[in-house]
Figure 1 (tube, rainbow, N blue to C red):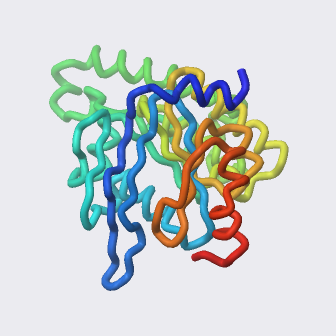
Figure 2 (cartoon, rainbow, N blue to C red):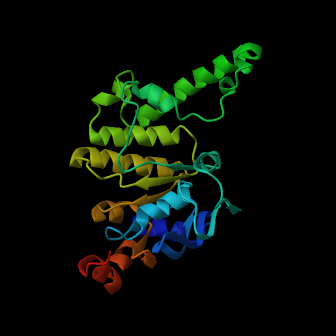
Length: 266
């Protein structure tokens, strides 16, 4: 199925994540200015724009790292603007970062296991009162972690320390970690940054595989070829505002986008 036809398939789906008139100010600077959009269930939505456009601040607002100065953020129709990041993870919103920071001395499987959520063994008394349940959950979590490492083509390194990984492999490990939390939507922050061409193809394939499982994606990316190949729709930000949206082809031909990139918008 082509990207364009996939985009038509998701066009009528209900939103899993919504930004409504979101504003974020830092003193006298307005980094995000009255931005509204929906992320539709099951799609891969791209967020692009020149440096300084407000994309990362927008991600921080969606993920709960920053509160909005005004406006609303909704997950599955529930208003979450005042909730911290860990509550949004519990609601099914996961996030990766442009520069992954795994625990370097832990093995890959240990790094993935750290992302598991709401385990019985996290409660001290449960380890004494329900040891069988704790053991069963730990076994299931280890099995799932290995499946996820296999998904991102890192199985052979499962018991090696994360410090040995290349930049591209760290991106893949971070993708496995965020999947361990069973997200409904993943915010991907520049998955192509610092990745060689061979591993980039692996990352693109894995994003498609995960999306085929029903996981929604919103990604920031400067690699326009990757955006064109992956995204059903694209949002363009410039100077803190939403400039336009459309299919990758529509956005690429929009004169406002050409001006934003070539005209020096910040």
